[in-house]
Length: 204
Image (cartoon, rainbow, N blue to C red; front, side, top):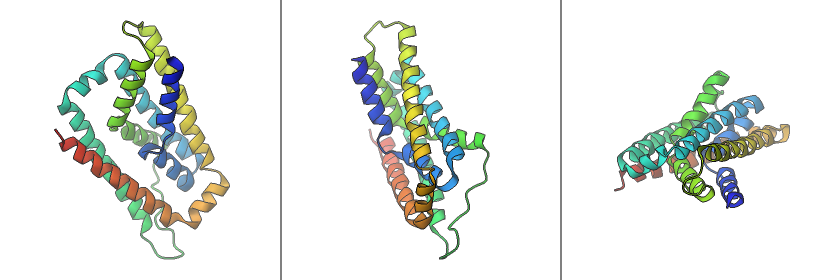
């Protein structure tokens, strides 16, 4: 069961989603260090939800639909803001960079990744699923914490691999060649995900 839970978690983390696309886009546009800073924030956000699931707080939030709806609404607005930021980079004239990257510190980039994942209700569901799959009822807190930390290590490895792979010279050259198209796709994906999350927050 433990191996199955680790596998399910790894597949969930590696599958394309707003966080993965954000790390990929940041790696191509702003380089390896910035992408790793964003990835570290995402992993910290995932770890927070993992600890919440371990101590039962996420399950409590899931039962209280109002709290989950608030998280979805905040997440939806945040994704729409990310869509707007990506769309701004699409605008520009031929031969001129569409938009300069925001000169933010690495701490702020990390905080952006943290906010992205803390407002992602999918993370709550994934953690609840893998924790319940891996840990039997009455499992010791030490075992639960060991599992969460192991999953955090898996998450860090996967996001770091994305950051490293998409910050190579070849990937960055490809990004510069099709910068507008890449940002247009990112804007569309973020907007779609944001609208869906906002609609989900209104569902009863």
